[in-house]
Length: 200
Image (tube, rainbow, N blue to C red):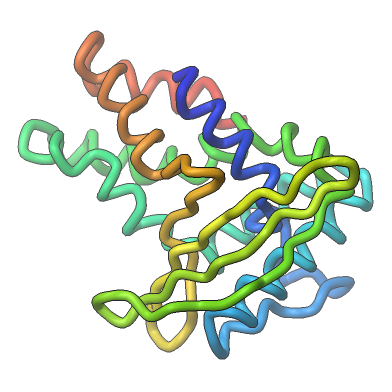
């Protein structure tokens, strides 16, 4: 899963996807009224949480973020779409249950490396199906700005993150390729075991 680990390091640079939550009294709710405000408030609150320095609290907020601001079910289905005809309902249920915790357990600790970064929202562009791409720059002291495009989708009247492209890396495609590699070599149950081991 080297490719996806490297890709998610790019997400960490871009991310406030990272830690805002609508359940924390110390943080404002993410504004989902339009794509640009959604990405702007999401990242602003996310960096504020990272700067608190409390990793366990950050992981809890990341879990809340996944549930409320990321289209987890849609992303998860896309990642294993080619394998759905050959997986059982029990395997699919185990995968769906493990996905949020897998992301948290594998990557939350990496986010603190980028607590001094910020996001500048440049513009948004509608996409097919009523979604939008929000174009941003990641500003990190002493480094060149990095282009990051957030693909968002409107679900039930609110915006949610569907994908992220950072410096030319399509995160969903990178993750799908890593999942495919594990399944092709060892089978779907091996992927579930890997996800469960990192779901901490």
